[in-house]
Structure formats: structure tokens, C-alpha cells
Length: 85
Image (cartoon, rainbow, N blue to C red; front, side, top):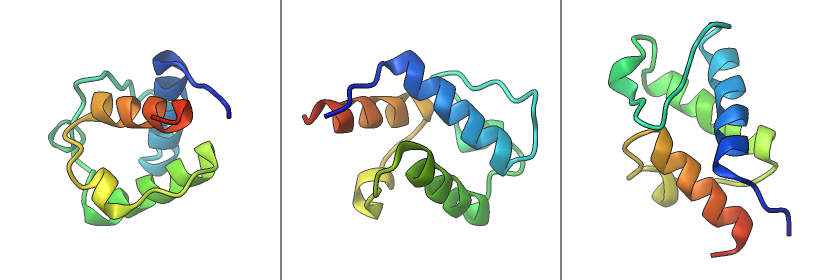
């Protein structure tokens, strides 16, 4: 099983977010939420999920991601997923 560090996860997530929001200068932090990005609506939420699934070659279940409050929680979820815990 592949392991991924929090920094690696954040780097990949940043690329996904930049593509979805078409904003090359977008900077994510672990505290970034949907409220911080004006264009982050329900349609872009779906695009983010699909982009993450492609970028990380995983399948995300709605129940796993619906409760995530910020980018940091997504990073934690991805690190746990790849560590098998």
C-alpha cells in the first residue's frame, strides 16, 4: 500500500483545487473551507470529489467526506486512507 504524507496530500489537493476553480495562484491551507473560496458551490464540490478521486486513484464515499469541515480534515482523511487506518 502506498503511503502519503500530509505535505504530499496538500500539494496534490492544491493542484486539484487550482484546476477545478481555474485559479493557478490559489493557495490552500489546512484551515481553508468552502467559505474561503467564493466559487466553491455544490457543483464545484462534486468536481472536487471527482478530481480527488482521479488524482489519488481512490473512490470517496459520500459518508466519508460529508463531515469534513476543511482542507486539513481532507488531508487527514487521505493520509489515513493510504496508511490503511
